[in-house]
Length: 425
Image: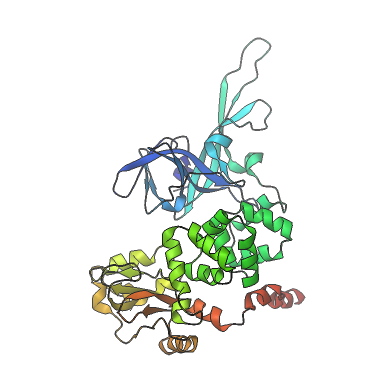
């Protein structure tokens, strides 16, 4: 099926009811959020503006949109119910594009826009529907409405010209890995850095900050207003957020923790209670945890979650309720390769790796690194004296603590030797 056949015109989406996983209506679609991209790439759809029954408008990212039909939009998972506020680099299909003029020989305006799904829950603008009035002849004929469907890049306002304004950089970042974004931020002068940081969304900025040297992390967080800094910390992995918070002035750290979402702040405070170079200080409190009655199919569905890192997705941990850390009694762990080789209806609890002894939260770095080498692991469970699962240590956390403190800064400042050799050849 061609992209044209799969295109969804957004005038038909705006106004549709939005239903949750249970089929209950939570609101209606009021607009569609997108941003422009460089290198002649199609504008990417970021999400939907949904009006709840309380008439408050919220943002629902496209990753939460499970299905779009002629009757409704179905969403999955939790959404942020904070009031939607459009960022400087974002545009709205209804408010910013509909009825917008398009340069033509006769007055022409946009009356609809379509989008297509290019990957799983990733959408781009595709076509633009335009309408114009034919010129009236000297005999009084003409003036009829003429419609046409054109490609998105035939609309100048949707093509982002090259340049290095903050908006251009943010658009460029949309197709880059977080480590590469961090390198770009590292190379910016202070004035431009401040403008780009202001324009970036919290999630992208959080992932980039995690890849920066420690001194630059502190400098960036300290430069933000306290509310924005708390929001960005809340988007960071809890272990990375804890590492950053412990290096901040005590008064600022407490104020930030006080303004974070209670659940996020609780995770960070718990990690701060352990020594930095211990399993407890390195672990993330958000591994994949399932109950003793979970099947292989359910476990595989959990590790398919796009937000999981490859390391965390490599193993699932089985516990008694509650299934949030600190959990009920830890039962054991299963490697994802074992899940792939097993029938979907089998209980995960019947295939535990009985040779894997968990780490303790006070296990020192040297013991943790030997543990990973001995068992050839990329993730390992951390269990307390009462048998509760506290979290999991990943191999990248171990490496972060084994490498010199300034390894990120050194890496960013070193020339790309491989590229130089290639160029000289």
